[in-house]
Image 1 (cartoon, helix red, strand yellow):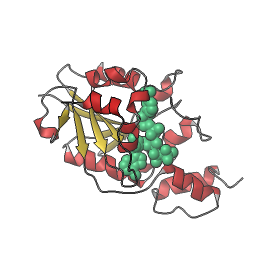
Image 2 (cartoon, rainbow, N blue to C red):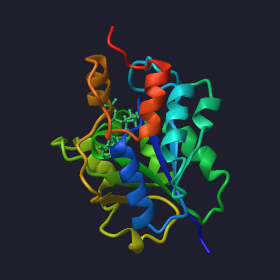
Image 3 (cartoon, rainbow, N blue to C red):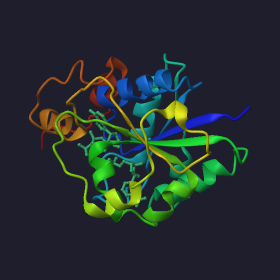
Length: 213
Ligand SMILES: Nc1ncnc2c1ncn2[C@@H]1O[C@H](COP(=O)(O)OP(=O)(O)OP(=O)(O)O)[C@@H](O)[C@H]1O
Ligand SMILES: O=C(O)c1ccc[n+]([C@@H]2O[C@H](COP(=O)([O-])O)[C@@H](O)[C@H]2O)c1
């Protein structure tokens, strides 16, 4: 029987309830054993975060510690090139049987920027894209992204039988939380409790991350 695997990549600077709740709902909706959260080491498309990849990984580990439906995958920290998603997908694929299904989970904002990704037109050869809604995003996907997904949108993941090549939009609980907002609150000395799990908040405090300058 074909396995179904979902990979949720992110900078996770820091990981927050928007990521975690979405990942959990993906795992439940697709009846997965787990969703793998993959923190990037060298984000290909934005300035290097002030917080190290190791610390961002640790925050994800703390966040998911009590939830068996979520796991963490540190493979991007083992590469010294930019953390291109195509490389991650190829490396995960090598561990799967050819008929296994691989889903790459991304938010609507990331999806809209897809046409700037490294070898972006090859992504669907290796995975299905599972696009999460973000309530604060009113972005229109660019024409290039529309062209990529043309004829590839599946209205229901259950109709997908192939190992890769489709795009599915998932309506998960809308949570208008972003890491940018959390970093801004912390830099102003504000309380971020309940936007991140308590263990992540404690780590941020003990490590002195995102402090006001
Ligand atoms: N609240 C949310 N709901 C759904 N998806 C989200 C949410 N926040 C982030 N994502 C998605 O999770 C993935 C990783 O996001 P990322 O780590 O960049 O978090 P972020 O909150 O968007 O960070 P930043 O504000 O620094 O850009 C992306 O695909 C992004 O679209
Ligand atoms: O491969 C690329 O060129 C590429 C460009 C932008 C983003 N990504 C990946 O997309 C995921 C979400 O990115 P971000 O910036 O929203 O955290 C994360 O895993 C990034 O490494 C990948």
